[in-house]
Structures are given as structure tokens and as C-alpha cells.
Length: 547
Image (cartoon, rainbow, N blue to C red):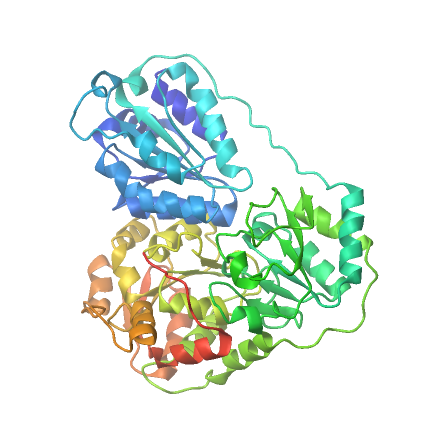
């Protein structure tokens, strides 16, 4: 067999189900080898879409999503999605064809040093120079991509190497298990908690990846410690019904006061990814006692110096810590952020205002979806509302990109999520700007029969930037644009298009769309005049969120 067939056998050995990508001249040998493989190739319309599909597939499954491009512009188009996966800790293996090694030493058509380009945005980047190294390279790429903290790996595969003859086989896949932290450290952590007057839990996406939801909830119920989660840890505990859930924090200055950080004396940081919510925002004076529970040691940061680190299996360490703490009966006081959150969730659920207020859109969306269904939020003003007010009950059911925070992720991400979980309803929640960045993948979704709903919050502008410009300068600059007729646009692909013309039309439209066996685009005009209310209630937005 040739090297490309060995490469595909190694992917099969890693239990790869899908490869998202675009065929090209320099990956032709791999495309031909795939014809005899059980792996399904998902032919996309843009490499960024392919990377986002692999990104979200990896995040919701925990298995590395795989994307493929040709050399040069094909590979550069992968960059945004690869960077998003790496910074959001989604396991991914990105592969690019490359020119023959016989012309890489000189100026040559479409040739770039791809390894150097991808190295800063991946955990591992390498070029295959000998076919004999393929089993080791593939095993290492997947091992590193899927190991905590997960991220992206990149493989550059020159076309002449891909054609060489080789007789070899994949390496065995051996999965390691994380262990319990030292018992003495667990006892010391329990002692700190017992002596704290007002402890709380800050939980991040690492706890979702570790599937620690059940043990976290049991620990919180036992200790009566309130929980606040980051954007990407939504659903780790039920938001709406759990009295110990203070909802979502991150990226907002007022969370320090409203979220209880100012009043606490101890914070138990569980699976906390610093990229989401920097410690200088919630530990500005370095005054809190910190306990770090994670799969890896804490990042070095002047505002994040843990007193104790419990490294290993997050769920098992929480379970062990529970056994060293006395059970508490009384619930702690209600926190302002929870009171504001619940009231705001319910305040406009019956509103008939049009264009529709964000609170109403989110209430109807949650009402239409089952708790196991998946909402994928794009980046924009709607993301702030989804992060705050979408009533999320289970982990990985509200997917938000909040490390790299890239616009354009929702539509291709919905394809990846639907392929991973074909029996769950999937809704891509997007602004009109983010939607058109990768709307070409609607054709991909229809071709591969992956039905989902696209809910467009339509305001004909870059709404989040408009919001921030007006708050800072009192005026806006260059944020307006015009949209196509989204109903006709949907129909041109062969999808269903619905335009919402009154507030009472949204809920039935969502319920109907979720039942359709095709892609449905819902054009929903939104009134973002409530944005300032969100900041007044839940903190001043200070982050810069850009595509």
C-alpha cells in the first residue's frame, strides 16, 4: 500500500468517523484512499467551515474532529477554525496537503511554511518527511489533541510522500486514566473550606470536558457552596431550578460585585480555563484563598496563585473532598446576580413588542427545545444574552465560543453537532453578520441530510460593536449593512425560510422548524435597546469581542 492508505488506516484506528474538508491536487492520494474507507468525507464549501465543523464536533464528543485542506490558500483558510479549537480546548486534528519536498527549498507555486504558521495556534505541528513515521505522527497528534487540556494538532503531508510505498500498521491506542490527588492535600483543602466564612465555586469548561457534572452537583448540595460558571461551562449545573446556581459570569466588570466574588473569602476553582475569565477581574487584590481542582497544574498568573492544587480526575477529587466536609443544611443567602438573572429570564416572556426583545427570543427558544437539544451560539450581541439568560440544564447543550470567540462558527458548527448527535435537535443561534460569514455551508447540510434550525437575530448591523461604540463615544461608526431577503436566500438552497412578523409567531415557528427534516432559517428582527439594561443588571461589558 502507499503512504496515503496507511494514513487513512491510522485515522480509522483512531475511530475517526468524519473528515471535514475540501479536495485539492496535493491531497488527491488521500481522497482516493478514502474511497475504500469507512470514514465519511464531508465535502464542505469553505475550509473555515470545515474547521468549525471539526471544532464543534470535537467539543461535543470529546473525540478529535478532523479537517482536511490542500496546500497554500486551502490551509490558510483553516487557520481561524484551528485557532478557535485550540483556544477553546476542543480536540482537533487538522491535515493539509503540501507540495512535494523536491520543490520546498525554493520559491514555488502556493508553497508556504505551514508548520511554522500553525505552530503558534496548535499543541503540535509537524510535517511528514518519511512514510515510516506516519503511525507515530498520527498517534502523537491524536494523543496530544485529546489530552487535557485538549486542543488542535496540525499535520503537513507532502504529495510525494503520500504516494510512496510502505508496509506498516497503526500503533495501538492506549487511553490513560487520571488518578486521585494526594489524600493529605485533599484534607488540607477540606480544612480551608471548613474555616471559610463565605466560600463559593467557580466552574469552567474543564469540568464539562471531565464529565464532572454529577459529582459537582453532589458536592455543592452537600457543602451548600454556591456555583457560578463561565460561558463555556453553561449547563454544568441546572441554571434555572438549582438554588445554588448563580448563573454565568465572565468578561464583565460588574460580575466582581454582583457575582459574589467581592464578598467571598475562598473560591474553589473547578476545571477553570483562564482564557475565559481572567483572574484580575475577579481577584483584583489577590485577596481570595484559592483551591485549584483540575486535570493540570494552574497557569502562572499574579492574580491566580492557588493555596492548594488538587490535580487529577476532577470528579473523583470532588467526591473525595465531599467525604472530608460536614454536610450543611441551610442554604446560603441569595446572590444578587441569581435574583437578577431569574427575574430577567421571566420578565418579557409574554411580551408582544416587535421587533422582539432578546429576553423573549431566548424564552421562546428554550421553550421550543428539549433540555437535551443543542444550541450553538455565534459571536455578537446575541451571545451575551444567550450566555446570561438561556436556561441551560445539561452540559454541552449550549455551545459558546469564548476563548477565541470567532464569528461564523454557528452554522458550520451545527453541521458538526448534528452529525455527532443525529437524534438531538440542533439550533444555530446567530446574528445576521455572523450568519453570512459561513452561510454557504447550508448547502453542505442539505447535501448530507443534517437538518437543523438557524435562528437569525436580525438588526442589519454589527450590533455588539454598535453597543460598545455608543457606550464609549456616544456615537457609532461604520456598523450598518444591508441583508438579503433571508426567506428567498433559504429557498435558493432548497431550505425552508420563515420571516417573523409578530412576537407571537416565533414560538410556533421554532416548534415547527425543529420538527422539519431539513434546514430551516428563521429571520427574527431583534430590538437590542435592552442591551444597556443587561449591563446595568449584570455588569459593564468591558471585553473586546472580535471575529
